[in-house]
Length: 283
Image (cartoon, rainbow, N blue to C red; front, side):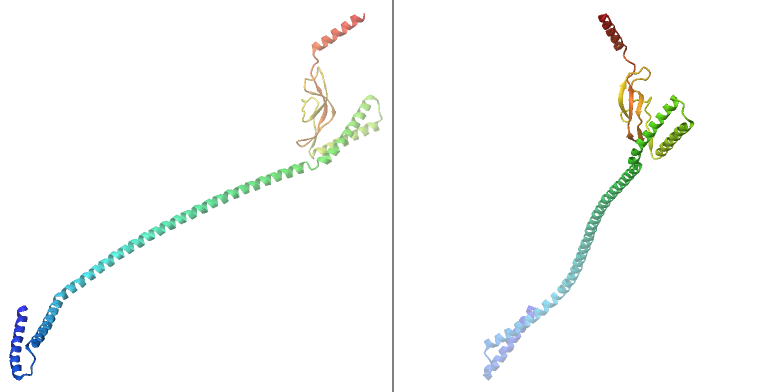
């Protein structure tokens, strides 16, 4: 390519030499320096053009290869980016699912704890309500059971009066002969006393059995304690006033005499000795 360019320049120089001789002859052409410059410029332009063409011819495959490589690299980069994006989306979904599962578990645990607390509260409330119901029922039954306590307590003196009358009439009948009418009247009073006592028993009133029973301070009121050879110590000998029970409650305690057991022999002997000494001293 350099040889071609040189030949072209030489040819042009020769041509320019011939022309310059002609020009000198004619006197109308330019100087040799100016012409050489123009020839150099034309040659330079030609060289530039050829070099540019050659460069383009050599660069074109390179550019095509680079384009192909760029496309492949771009595809690979896009594939890598897509894989990274997919992996990121997968990990993000897994993280979100883990967070959602954790929040759901926390919410379920909170709801379970709340349900358990509410259940315990309702069970306690139900138990308290049931206890209150039973207590109210018990109070109601007790109040209903002892609602007539005042009335029955007022009827006890009536029973005392009837028993005193019956006792008085019975003693009188036993001591002397009375008319049949009086005996009939006595029997009528006893019948009325029995009917009244039976009627009061249906309402929970019952007499306290005292004579022959062991002294009970909850049911008996001891008016006197006396020695007795027949009745053991602590037993009730006699009843002065009958007591009554209203269901399980003592309405009135029985007034009784309690046995102290047999009298002590030593005390009796010492009393006898003292009486003997006093008699001797008097004599």
